Image: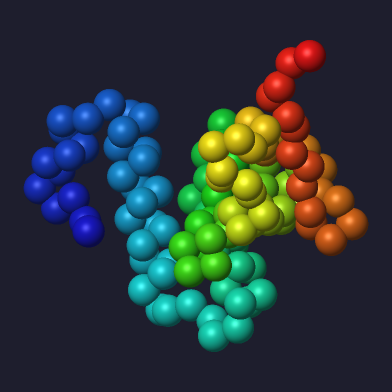
Length: 119
């Protein structure tokens, strides 16, 4: 996806052009395919996101829709963490919870949930 005619470069702001350039670079990184094993795929995807990150990038998010998981890093805590939707109670009477993405990982990459209920 090259901007041969400079169509989007002449139309959009520097920030938007930077986003397009990062998208093109990320897409090029992915054209070779991804590794077969899950841990290798996560590492590959994280490397891809790191290759296109901006200085002001706060979070890198990798969605696994088949396993209903969110893998993420943050600028303050760059170790990979995993949020499992299967562990969330979505029932009507469940306690409302919030997830702080800016937190260190536990021993096994686990994350902590925070109740939003007030006493």
